Image (cartoon, rainbow, N blue to C red; front, top):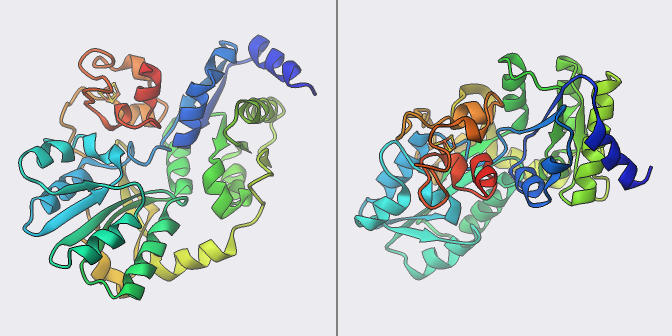
Length: 344
Ligand code: SF4
């Protein structure tokens, strides 16, 4: 079928309402950038789920980074996004303003040079992310060991997607189909989601990030919903295989084990996270038990937005008190956040 015919279908669909959800921050960003929502009929709702790593990190994790950056001879190294995420009282940026040591880096590997040049300074890397970014932190730890560095640790907030999707399906999110995260599937394979499709009788479409790729995947997903096909279809075959990347997964298994971890607004989800195994605990700066989620602004509705229970515009703070320049919640900080993209 021509792409114009797919667009035509998506624009003019007038059947029963279909609720689709993407669970990948890069999809959230790409859908906003390409104006995909504007193509959809009012009967096809496209929601943004818990796929932005910064957005799902509970406030206790930010509070811990702040406590660490205020220690003597200790620097927190992080990607830029985390700097402005509010903890229970303040952000890392605000802590930096009162003397905290925070270094913004573009790659976890940047920490190696810093640690080597400054042996009297301890560096803690803020290792947040999903199946996609978790392997990069294992490469960092490989290098730390190879270089014999004793002054590098990580504070992990690593999550895996199936636990969150199960949580949504079991807690009334009423989603008819998921756009499976393309980057995660590049590591895990498309079949990673087959068990969920079967268990919850819900289809998944693995999608790339271009405008045409998204249109094709959303069309395919809508068709699966209409035809009651509860399977995983891969529309990103240029990158994603059906099976996992064995090399990366063996690296995962060397360093990490599954753990129960907290997601912002959703609480602790059993088996939905990765933590360092006991033999690598000396590299962990205290990642276990960072479960508290005490919002600085009690009116923030990030948790409900991540679960598809409301939209950014339903939050009373949206665009008034909370803007990308002055974020009150994590979803307004990152380019992958629902509120940021809705505002933009
Ligand atoms: Fe939270 Fe701001 Fe989004 Fe409201 S608009 S839910 S305060 S991030």
